[in-house]
Structure formats: C-alpha cells, structure tokens
Amino acid sequence: MTSSSNENIHQKIRYEFPYDVKKLTEISIPVDKNIKLAATIWMPQNKNVQLINEETFATILEYIPYRKADWTLGIFDDEYSEQELSDGLKILDWIQNQTWSNGKTIIYGKSWAGFNGLQIGYLQPKNLSGIISAYSTDDRYNNDIHYYGGCLAAQEALSWSTQMLIWLSVPPHPLYQGGIDKDFDLFNIWKERLHNLMPLDFYWIKHQNRNEYWRHGSVCEDYSKILCPVLLIGGFADLYNSSIFRLMNKLKCEKRSILGPWGHQWPDDAYPGPKIGFLQEIVQWLDYHIKKINDDYKNKESFSIFKLKPNIDELHSTLKERKGNWIHFNSLPFYPNEHFQRNHLLIDKNQEVNQKTIKYYLSFQSLTTEIISNDSLPKKISFLS
Image (tube, rainbow, N blue to C red; front, side, top):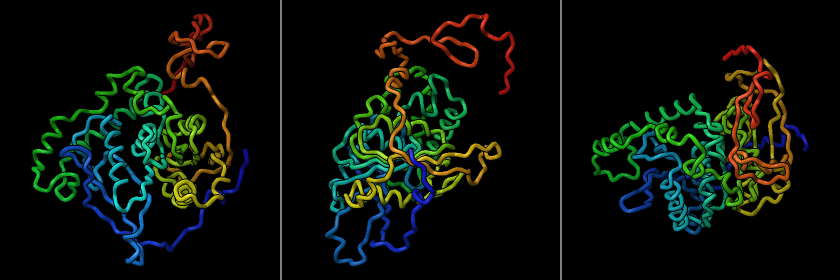
C-alpha cells in the first residue's frame, strides 16, 4: 500500500474541446413490436463541418428507468427485470448499427444505472466495451436496500418503494412523451399504468430468503462473467460502499475503483467533500481502455481510497468536507469463502463446502452458529435505540 497527496486524484480543468455538441431530444429506439424507448443523444459536431459525416464515435450509454425529461415512467414490472436487461442488450445492438457508432459502447451511471451496467456486463454482450458503475452492488439480497442478510431494511425499503410508487403514478407529460407516438391517447396510457401499478415492496416481501429472485441480477453469482474493463465509484457516506471491496477482489477483468467520502452523488458535486476532478478521471480511463492511448494510465494503482481521519465532531450529514488523505494501492485481503457463507453454507476445517444449511442462534450482541448457554448471557441488558 502506498499513500500520496491529493494531487494524484485531482486533475487540471480543461476549457477548450475539439468538438461542439448538438443535443437531439426526440429519439426513439425500437426494442420490440410497437415498443420504443425514449432517448436523448448528445452528438459531437466537428468544428470543421465537412468532416463530421466521415467520423464515428464510441458511445457512452446511461440506461435508467426514469423518463428522460420529466421523471415519470411507463408500465413497470420490477427492478432489474428480465425485460429491462433484454431491452438493454437491444439498445447496444441499435447503437452498433448507427452510422455514427464505431461499435464501442460504455455503460455509465450511478445507482440504478450503475446496477444496469454490471448486470448487462454479466450477460457478456460482445458490443459492450466498458462499464463505469457508481454506487451499485454485486449482491441484490445481502447488499441492497431491501434485505441485509435476511433483515428487511424498514427505512430504506419502505421509503424507496414509496418514492417509486409516487413517480410511477404521475401521468405522461404531453411535451416529453419520448417512445410514444404523438397521436396516442395519453389519458388512457396513464389509466393503464395505474391499473397495473404495484408497490415494489409487494414483490420484495414475497422473497424473504435468498432465492432465484435475488440471484437474478446479482453478479456475485459468478464474477468471472464480466469481461470488459470496469471503473467503480463509491462513497463512505453512501449505502453502497462494501461492494467495491468484493468486486475489486473477485472481478477477473481489468478494473479500477475510487472510494471517497461522498454520499450518493457524482464525486465532482458530492458532499461531504473533498470533491475530485471526476470527469477528468473518466476521460483518462476512456482514453486508455477505449481509445487505446494514454499508456501512463496503466501505471495508476487500481484502488484509490480517501482515508478518513477519525473525528467525532465530523459525524453528521451536513458536513461539507471530511478530513483525511488519499491512499492508493493494488491489492486487498482475499476472503475465498465469502460467497458460500452468503448462501448460508458452512466451510469446514479443510476449507471444503458443507452443503448442510447453517443454523444461527441468538446470543448476546450477535448471531452464532453454536448454541449458547443461558448461564453465559447477561441477566439484564440496557438498550438505547
């Protein structure tokens, strides 16, 4: 492990760029018969207009279920459904067939979009060239906002399900239809949506144990299936931070990660700080992995972490900036049996998997795999919630 000053993570600001950008807002991507997805494209425009038709470009795709302009959605079945991932593969094919595409696509995004990047990468599409995933997880059951090791996360599960219910209930906006033909009856589309609407926690509570419902979309089932390069972003003030350590340990592809003090926002605009030149980091990563230039990037350590300085005065959410320093290193401790234990299987003394399901017993301050004598438990326990 090596430590370094903050200069290694901060980058210089660029003010000049080789292209102008044209925003195309009324793009529909056909994914099935009578089904289209709404898209916005930011298209590079060469300042020498005569050259623009001769150029092709790599594509950075953000793939999310929220509507592209007004945050209302269409008929929706569940998070990370088979249809959602299948549609994602069709979008990759659509992009590859566009005249402006050079065939290379990177899925980029945070939270839901970050999940989609990892999960589509797990399906090994040949036209996916890289993944930039921020604030996501490898394990939908143990490390998402629904269940933590079998315990329903009452605050996050209920609040997120309620928030999604609110967004899903909003009617289509006549100015931002995207994917919907302009002569469609928006009122009837809204009615159909409401008739099919179901709070997400209705599905989650049906699956209280780790089963196929949760294994679907959990890349921890086989980390080796992700083949393309991956850039991971996380924050200590975010719920999705432990997954970075597992992904960096288990992914077989080229990978790099940055773990800062941030909450659930991009590192150039998140708090608590310090913020970093995140877009500059992305450009360097893309130059190396997609354009195959900038060979100096391969000399960067694979893991950059903002080492927080312990300070009781900083432990509140409104803090603008945490004290600490950046450290950079290439390797992590390895826990080979974590996946088996996550699936409730015991590992014996010979490091072999015992297919007998683990039984947990309640003891003082923890769960244990052995029965605890009542004599070893305290007679009285004070608890402050």
